[in-house]
Image (cartoon, rainbow, N blue to C red; front, side, top):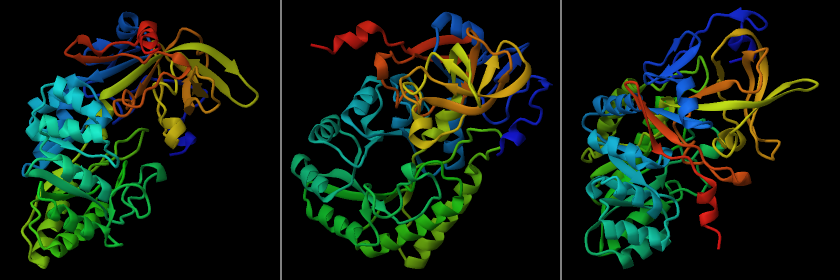
Length: 437
C-alpha cells in the first residue's frame, strides 16, 4: 500500500478512526483516548510508564479458540517463542492447546506455568545437551530432531520410548522475507527432502532403540499468506510418508500464518486453510495408500500479534532537510523487527487529532537503523510529551527485547474488562547490575 493510499488527506484535519484489523478486539476511541481491554491508554501510561507493552487477554483467548474451532481434529500447538510468558502459557493450557518450546529456558517458563509435559513439544534447529537433558527430565511428550548429530545425542541420553518427530525441509517457497523463509533448500533448518537426508533421518531414528518415531515436522516460514503453499507442503510430506516404510502417526505443518501489520493487509484465511489442507491431506493419503496422520499446527504470531499495543512517550521532535523525526523513549531494544526484517508498523497519537503530516518515528538507541516506523501520519504539531500507540506488537516484541545501551526492558501489562495487571514487570537498573561480577 502506498503512502498516498494510507494518507488520503495529508495536511487536512481528520476524524479519529481506528484502522481496521490492527487493534485488539473491542478497542475503541473514547473522545481522543484509546481504550484497550476497557482501560484508557492514557491511564496505562500514567500507571505503568512508557514504553509499555499492553496485551489484551480476550483477544489472545479468542484467537486461540478460533484455531481450535477451525481444526477440531488437529492438535493446536502454541508457538511459545512468539510470546514467552508463564501467564500466557497458562491461558493456552486452560484452553486445551499444546505448547512448543525451543530451549531449556522456554521449558522453564512452561514448568513455572504448570503446563502439562504431555502437551509440550521441544524443537529448534540447535538443541544443546542441556536443552535435551531438560526435556527428558521434564518428560516432554515429543522432541523434534533437526540433525544427525542430535539423533545420536538424544538416542544416547533418552530412556526407551522417547517420542521423536523429524523436521523436514520440504523445499516449498512460502514467498515471504528471506530472513523468515524456513522451508526452502540450503538453509539451516531440518533435513532436506530433495537430497534424501529426510529419509536417511527416518532410518537413523528407527535404529535407535531408545527412540520411537511418531511423526514428521516442517515449517515453511513466517507471514505466509497463501494457503496453496501449505497444500503443496502436504503433498510433499505425504510423499515422504509413503516412502518411510514405517507408520507415521502425526504430521506437523508448523505455523507461520500471516498477521496484518498495516491497514489494508489481508488476514490469514483460517477457515480456507482448515478445509483445503484437510482435503489435500485426505486425498494424498488415499492416493499413496497410507493412513491419514493426525495433523498438528503451530500458531504463534497469529494468536498474539494483534492482541498487543505498545505505548511510547515522545521525547523530541527534529525537523530535518527532508524528514521530520519523532524520537520516542523506546526503540530497537523493545522492537528490533524493523531493523531485522524491514517490518512496517502503523502509529497513532493518543489524546488529540488535527492536521497530519508524514513523519519518521525513531528510537533512543545509538544506531541509524533504530527506526520504528517511516512515513506515518501524525499531527503536524506533535511534540515532546505526546503519547504514541503502535498496534500489532504482541508477537516477537517481548521475546526479542534486549538491553542495548543498558536500557531496561518494558513491562507486559495484561488488560481485560477494565482491569490492568502486569504479567512481566519492568526491568530495573538493579536487574541489569545483578549479572555483573
